[in-house]
Length: 295
Ligand code: CAA
Picture 1 (cartoon, rainbow, N blue to C red):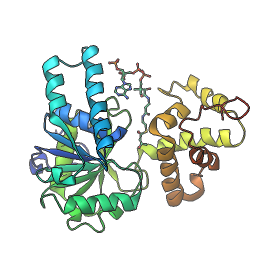
Picture 2: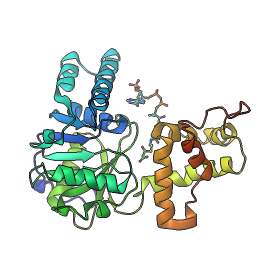
Picture 3: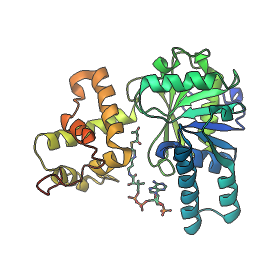
């Protein structure tokens, strides 16, 4: 009996991946770079718009490896090898010899399209392009590519090191060899990959946002944040919805809400309160309001 995940093409079609590029050096991008280097043992280069961001990403990876070392979850030689495999650059030229480049930049379609246009001008025609978008259309992202068949959605969950699931998104023109390579990579990363259709927020975030949306709606309607949040604790969730929103980042949560609202209308209302918090620079829903209670 075949052990291939449902919908995955024949693994014989998969291409070797010997160098990986990550666009972005923020939290998600750095977590991805670490996972790739650690599990696949291939060189990984991260890029960002300035040296300070690149340095921050590389420093994050080193600190995470040191934490693993302190917990004896990684051997010293593997720790050194992992660190050495990850480099940073401010130039996408560093992707010239990469065969897989994934973007983890801000959730803006035009930005992601611009990133892929720049990357496509540098990489070889065979290089696979992947997006870690959590809610945008992979089909729309592929629209202006010279080789749209090389783009695949590769959506991880936060924290990347711990969450076992990976949504692999097939856009209408995604090539079978590209998809087969994505599944082989997922196997190498020890993630459970599922093939999902290119629909707004794919599958997991649709489910998650129904739950989080209702908690945020209760908060919007006047239930204090701590009450709305703690009401769900006895449900045995690994993390309360507001803690999760803060971990993922309020702007990301807001973007997913908006994508779902655009696609499904009133089934996924957008919280005005969440937008207000973002406008005021609030990072977590637990920041005290003017009267000292959590907003
Ligand atoms: N990086 C690396 N490892 C981490 C980590 C991180 N950011 N956070 C936790 N861990 C590790 C800890 O080191 C610990 O490992 P050890 O057992 O080896 O010490 C292990 O995970 C468990 O952590 P804790 O004991 O601190 O806490 P916990 O048992 O509460 O688990 C959790 C933490 C795994 C994050 C858990 O709370 C959880 O599963 N939360 C839900 C996360 C979730 O739903 N993520 C999806 C978010 S949505 C998203 O990402 C998609 C999107 O598109 C927007």
